[in-house]
Length: 201
Image 1 (cartoon, helix red, strand yellow):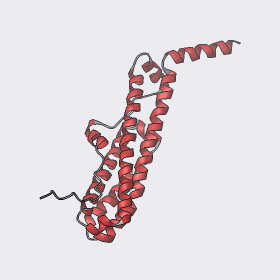
Image 2 (cartoon, helix red, strand yellow):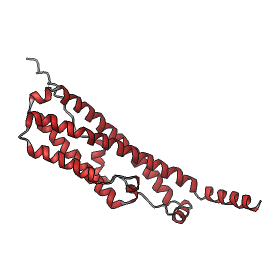
Image 3 (cartoon, rainbow, N blue to C red):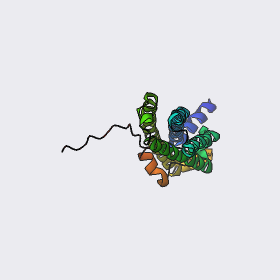
């Protein structure tokens, strides 16, 4: 009998101190991070095919092709586990690697502009379309993640839930910073090579 009363009292105390809010918010962060990782993986999976198609038309563009391949390898070398969001240094390295990947893909697409036959290749155009859609999904997923982390961090820092957070070991989590906000809102440009009509004489 007393055990039930103690359990009910503990539940009431923890609920009033933000424990349930911490649980829900932490799960939202995990879900948001999983979606970010999912979209980044989708992009990484497109890169080898994109590189191979470009190589078929522009094999001598070795620097750009190597840059993209190496950027993908750096991204793949990072263990992007759910726990990564609890390690600020590891999170920064992950974000930096993804930024390098974004820049490398942008350069590759810029090179493609110099090869009309490549731009007309059906597979290349399909990969461009998939890449554009993926970049948009990455932007959406990152923005959602920023929102969930902001909500979680407010709960962790606010009284009295901050006491509960300290008691159970909940700490603030890193998010995408001001330095890469532009990258969040502006995915790499994907040009489908549609010619601009000449002005009428």
